[in-house]
Length: 419
View 1 (cartoon, rainbow, N blue to C red):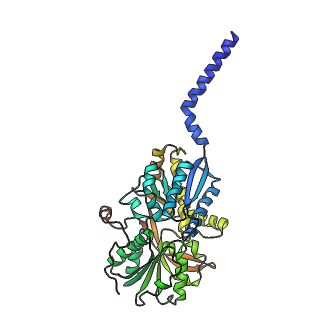
View 2 (view 1 turned 135 degrees about the horizontal axis):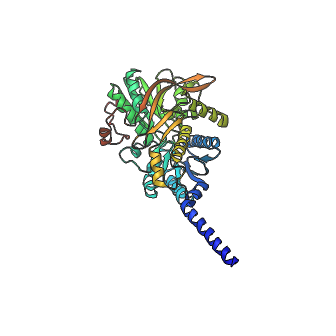
View 3 (view 1 turned 60 degrees about the vertical axis):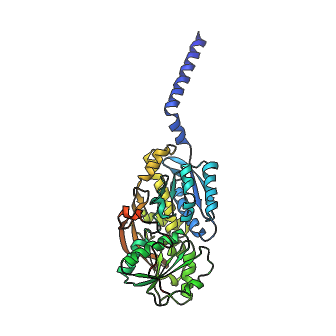
């Protein structure tokens, strides 16, 4: 009889445990498992400097958070795309299908993001872009699984073109840019607003991403232009600006630059040749707010350098991930809820200030006009003007903007070119 009672008690205990597990087990199990993050970066080639800075930014976030996000441990899987679209796709597939990651931060370049767009849609893998600025991923062909921590290629150059014409009073400008989508789109945004405000782009030159020497291009610059605008990524800005000085053009023809051409990550390797270069971007280490001071101090402490475009992008991507997961109590396994949280995220403590995304998954941010100066014994991008709350559509009507073709190498058409 006693055995029978004990048996019945054991059965009751087992049933109770089973019911409890059914009711709460999955959530508890999920909370105990690490969040699996894929990080797709570049470790070789012209973009490797940016890739290293991206990794530094992400690792700083993880150190500050004891490798935890929303109360769960993080397991990070790092893949090197080498800045090659085919390799980017292969590495992304490995992260998803071999490493079973639940979210990807990356890739670095615009052309890489375009190369994996179809796969992201097919795999339905949430992606937070820390730097890839390809316009159409949040414009005419928005990817429902893709959000940005940073803006589009032309988001900072559209206000910059206006600034160059209205405030710098430049009339005729020559342009040299990296011959890939980021360069094309950034140049296009600058050209459009510069010419709409009375300026003329009289020369456009395109250099390969892995160009070894800029002498051929510098030698072609029309000496009568008011300024030269350059759009470079990775370490190309470093090479160009040094050669621009060596060819004797510094002090003769003012130099305007894309955000990445004088990024803090390479500015540390420049000298007086960079002084006075004016650029536009949504970030500079000089932004004066508590969150940015904390970020800059952390990067200087851990990596002995100021953060720039790439480090900020990865750090902010992690902040976006953290806030989205907090919204859904860390349950990244609920993909629809996680993706909805990502697309509606608001981050109060981003180094840029309050960060919000538009309806297509792209941030609305301040754009800063910056000037390279020497302060405290180092080169910095000092803020000389702020354009608040800049949309990827600038001041244009969104419907009209999206009805037009995407910015490209030949759009808008350069009708003012001089021989």
